[in-house]
Picture 1 (cartoon, rainbow, N blue to C red):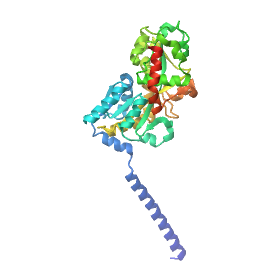
Picture 2: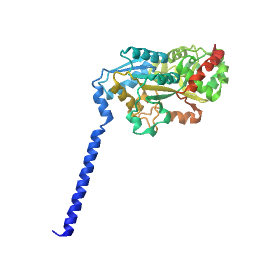
Picture 3: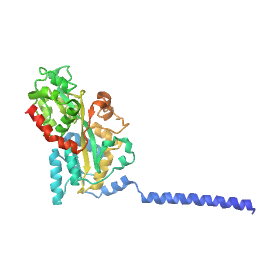
Picture 4: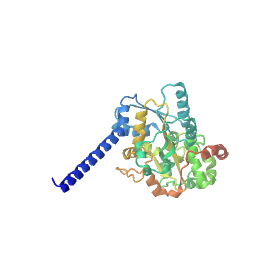
Amino acid sequence: MSLSKIRTTALATAALVAVAATAALAGSAGARTPNPVAALVAKSKKESGLVFYGNPPTANFEALVAKFKAKYPWIKVTSYDLEDNTIFSKYASEAAQGVRTADILIASAPNLWVYAHRQGFTASYTPPSLAANPRAYPSWVKQFAGIYIMSPDPVIIVYNKLLLGSTVPRSVKAIADDPGKYSKVTGYTVENTFGYTGLYGYVKKLGWSNLQKIGKRLSPTTGVSSQLQLVAQGGAQAAFLTSPTARFRIATDSGLKNILGWSYVYDAQPLVPRGIGITKKAKSPASARLFLNWVYLAAGQQAMCDAGFTAFKRGFKPSNGCANTLATLYKRVGVQKTYLPGFTATFVNARPAFAKRWHAIFG
């Protein structure tokens, strides 16, 4: 064999060896880093089910969970619809006793999430759906290690269509300026954590003047269900700065659909961050991680939209025309009119003085 042929054969052999080595390294790397979701699926099948302590209304959450269970049918879900304060106090008590407690906490309470973070209630975990594409969501999706915003909920106005006719109250100012048409209104008390957050956001944008004009016309309650009932029965013409979960209730209840309508708040649009976190004492951590990961996938965002929460993945377009998205809100109201408080000490420390001012106005 000639010298040139020997060199050509040697080079070809070396190239094949290099390709084989590269493939072997890639294969071994793949073996070292298995699909994280597949690993969670395998572990979840050995767990005892998923327990939620949360504040979403039962109807909304059941609609969301139904879509999750369609993908992971072996995961049994037990959920408790609780007040925000109870969510955290119940978990703290049970965790201290070492008894079965929540795997996931969901609450619209920035002040209590600050407390939960300080107390170390949640496990530090980054779902693969966020890790793979960190720019898919606004930076505020992550508030602390393991504590995320599940839904940036826009407060809304719900009104009685039968009492108001063609009038649609599109702002708190419209309600404040017309005591003849809006002689009785309802909304949250400042003691409710969702209510405080929405009121705080409105005041940060426009101050207290419109709330002062409403004054004693307000019949406050602590929950969205009681507000819907009051407005539907004619005890109030409208509920202002209330929960957007009412959108789902109105759309799916034929009786309410004929009576009630709703609107965004076009003079100033607070966003209430509904937080979510996996607990450190979770008995089904793999199932909990699957849920958290699913929420931030396109399928989870579609389910969130359909269940009356707010889908907020950038570029996400619902397949069925659902309008419960942050992009739709920004387009209709304007980004500059929105306000979303983070889970901060500033927000926590402002509450005593804010509550005192609220009670001076509304009693």
